Image (tube, rainbow, N blue to C red; front, side, top):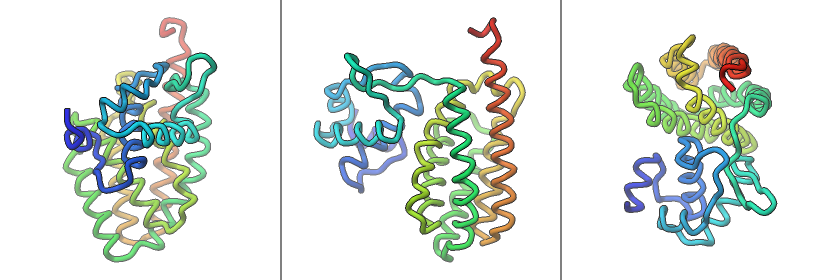
Length: 234
């Protein structure tokens, strides 16, 4: 498989640095569980798989570990963290606080050109609404959040990105259980509402939708945690 094929599948392009590209592609493999929870990271396998040199791969792995998307274990080296509800509740707690800053800041500071770019992302969400193209939706969500961070003019808000990565993986891992009570479309509909409000520059509406979205995420996270704790699911 060529590098162009891999970047096309993951939604990343090759225009950034080799470290940034390696980070993004490995992050995608973690979120989609191509790199399974609990699995050991082999640098040589990633070099071969991604067609990127060992030094950028290593630097990317260190960044992923700093973002807690990878974990260093004695005698095992770098491994993909397991998925558990206790971790996810901490992820949500932090993500919620950052989201309440990110969304209104993006609505307040976006330029007209940026508003058009966000409106285009909303159009892509609408195109995928109701489809089974879940990986494409997750990758579009990643692009949406990266765009909001850029538009917010607050570089410290990039801290939300690995929290979203862990949240996407959690949802994807438990999607079948999620669907016993919730609709896939609801998540996409929230993204559309937030994107529309940010594109319009309506800070108050954007914040309202972000709060509703976080309440919904909290509801389904707690539901999944309750269901996963049942003896018959262990």
